[in-house]
Length: 428
Ligand code: HEM
Image (cartoon, rainbow, N blue to C red; front, side, top):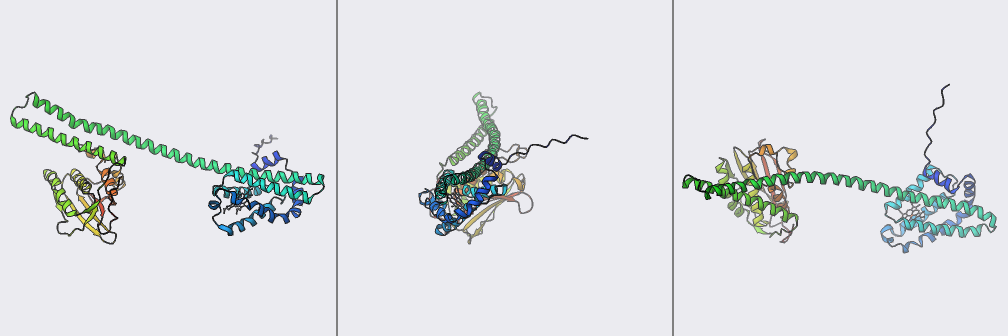
């Protein structure tokens, strides 16, 4: 005969543990059942006494949002709760019912101390009534003890729901914290990689400047033409360096909330006309077509900061030129009078950006695929700066796939002057 498998000792539930601790047994259950007809008539007064405390609760108006009607309803639910004390069955179902009541109080963020005190009010009221009901001291004592035990059990069940709700809340906070930790680590890794790249980007033109200058100073150029050529390289390296430093300064002042914009009525035609020639040279040097499709259009006035508008435009245009090995760059504009904005879009026939990466290019420190960028220089902050600037001018910015299946379309919007909010110089 095989030996019986020893059964795992079952873990005691909370209500079983409390009943054992309080010595709440069958006899008490019988006494409590008998108590109901004696105490039932006092339950309305108990509810009155209970709710007389309410005006003293500091957050009464926050907790009792339903006004008088809610209090009337709660008075009858409190009586139902009182009747439940004497039903003689204190099992898991009872525990769950009490837990739900406790949990309702946790949900309305009622401090546990008020529940404990309210239970004290109920307790002293019911014990007071015991004197009227049982003038005989001995008889009263047995009933009183049973009543005390069930009130203790209920109080513990209420407190347990507070404890469980707190634990659940802590667990959620912990999960959020762990998630935030992961995001922070990821952001740090991106930042580290970016810093390493930027240091390299700063060092490259600086090295050129130093070594070319030394070449000239040491008289190592073989002709004045060569000397001029070398100095031209020094000059363009200096320009690149300045652009990188400017980008870094811009993003840090935007992040610090120190960049103030001068929002005013602007003529986009004037901004386009003064910006396009700056990129035209760059485009021509790479044999790219630069087409301004807005020339035939009447562009409405917008509201923005002129310098920053030009900066965004220049940034998107030079990005388009930079990432387009052949073909061209087109600039067009559409006006949405209903929504009240001007949309400027710049389409290129360049290397394009996969759909799933288009949002992330506007995040700071994120660069496009480095392999595709070999030989292309920049801080990688241009688009992040453009996004912040456009948003500070109450516009939107985005990137889409090109209309002919290759390249990309970078676009941004600015509010029409006729629709815009009142002028303001808003810090970031
Ligand atoms: C021994 C202490 C308490 C008991 C036995 C008790 C009992 C109850 C009961 C039975 C309900 C109805 C729950 C339901 O519908 O499921 C309830 C709800 C409520 N109680 Fe208490 N209560 C106590 C303490 C308090 C205190 C101190 C306050 C405020 C100062 C309070 C405010 C409320 C409110 C605002 C609701 C409505 C919650 C909701 O709508 O979800 N309770 N209470």
